[in-house]
Length: 187
Ligand SMILES: Cc1cc2nc3c(=O)[nH]c(=O)nc-3n(C[C@H](O)[C@H](O)[C@H](O)COP(=O)(O)O)c2cc1C
Image (tube, rainbow, N blue to C red; front, top):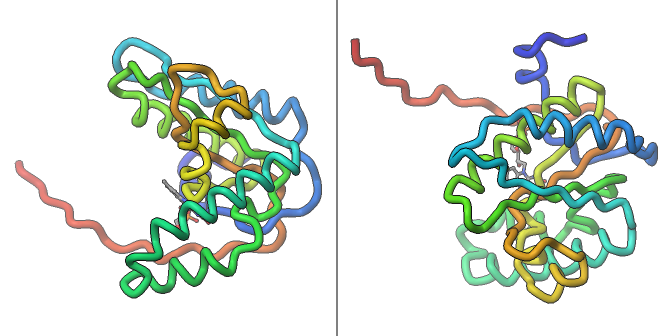
């Protein structure tokens, strides 16, 4: 078993998956780990939607990609690489076997932060069990569409915050370069 620092340092966003499904027990384990994230406002403002249905994932992929392309279209000259990459993508979920969307209570001020903390817990817990993951921001245009939210049966009063895919990695994933951040000490 990896220690926590090794888990943090070796987790990668995985964009190629085998066909092996993630078991229901592992999915429950990931959601259980999410619950242990810190939360502000004395509330635990998250809810989880687990999607393994390929048709639903395809619909979300098409809609998310279309929405993202229309956002990037006006600025495609300055973010050409992202734009071209998105256009080339067949499936924004990289054929992963499961998508878990973390929804946050709209009435809780710290929802976005709390759900992001929960997301990181899930991604690290997954990695500790050999399960790959990736946060898919490209799904957000689809998840902000009221008609789609209704189709998904999303809870009223909650907004989508973290769309996360999980599955077993195929091959190795290269780590994007980590730069030295600006650090200031006041002693
Ligand atoms: C808010 C957020 C949105 C992201 N959206 C996408 C996405 O739509 N597609 C994708 O392939 N990766 C996405 N990523 C993954 C990042 O590209 C990745 O975390 C970054 O390149 C660093 O690589 P690493 O996670 O392997 O360390 C997203 C990450 C975050 C935190």
